[in-house]
Length: 226
Ligand SMILES: Nc1ncnc2c1ncn2[C@@H]1O[C@H](COP(=O)(O)OP(=O)(O)OP(=O)(O)O)[C@@H](O)[C@H]1O
Ligand SMILES: [Mg+2]
Image (cartoon, rainbow, N blue to C red):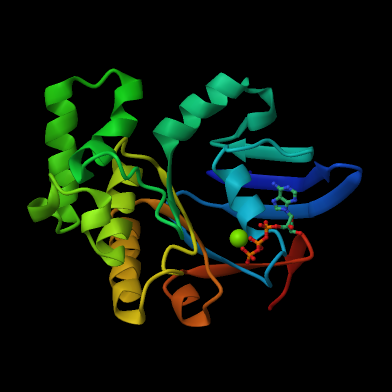
């Protein structure tokens, strides 16, 4: 049997809002191999973010199974799940989600705090990754003092802090102009070449072309195309 890094098997996610149940995912099946670069496309509200949140261990499915490295995430406690998330998965979001009260350097050092990395090692690693993101001249700046493209590069640096296997990027270029967006896509492409597994949510066919393969979702389940 083939081994997958990520496997979603008949996954359902039902949100309860007051008395209303929202079926965000309805029997979704996904398999992703280690080192793949996959795009996730589908109409607004189809369940893309829900899907990648589950892949990223931000939540558990209501029904069905998700296997990471062949381990069923349903079997993990919340705290085990957050530890796995911190080590194995790096998130990049459309709204950057970096912390405005911390310098760029401290933003990138922060995720390492939870994994017994010494202060000097945290600093060294954060500087190296920020250097790779072409941000060495911005270490002591605050997020409000840098551009959107730079913010997203900080977010990617932060996502890489614990050297995760998987990068989950949910519309990472959604708030950027096309030139800055292209820079971000080239960074993701390079991470893929260096062996990272990338799961990219996008609305944009051109961006999906950076991926090796596209998974389509419609009404919370698999579709053949948009
Ligand atoms: N926390 C939540 N509570 C209740 N309903 C939710 C929640 N998150 C998402 N939903 C609903 O689940 C469905 C899927 O949402 P999701 O955010 O996964 O879609 P999406 O494909 O990412 O859409 P978009 O392209 O607009 O980002 C939508 O109907 C949405 O309203
Ligand atoms: Mg979304």
